[in-house]
Image (cartoon, rainbow, N blue to C red; front, side, top):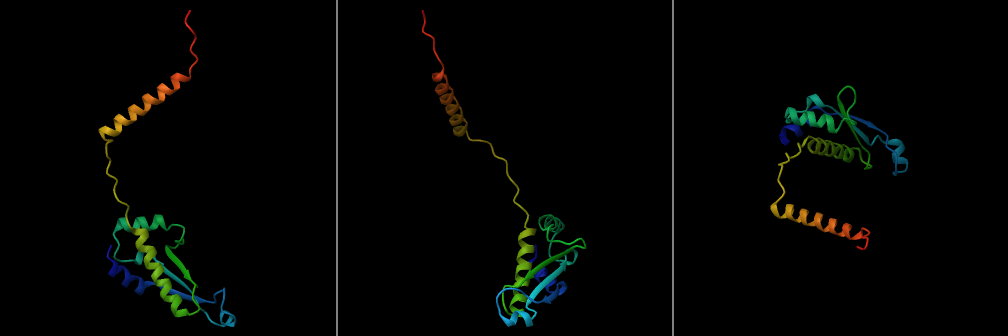
Length: 139
């Protein structure tokens, strides 16, 4: 992943829409379009490999529309400019964290000591259960 190319492609291709935001703010809420909705086509993102793009599509499948747009909103602040910056930060963070490929698992064998400990535990459990059995006295 190339974070510089990713950042520049987000700034270049993102589409912004503004609307009235709910929440606190008094009369300001009724007058100012401070809520920001940011949309970007997944295919327009640059700086990601094919595997990272595929992972992005699977991880963020519930946020991606049928037309292939990733949608995110921000309405935390009272200022449109602050919400705009916040939306860009969240979008970049969301994309970079979702596109991160998981580490490959290296299969390991159990150590000799752990195998011996497992056998010992099994023997002790077996002994404990055998003592619970009813023993008939010999005649």
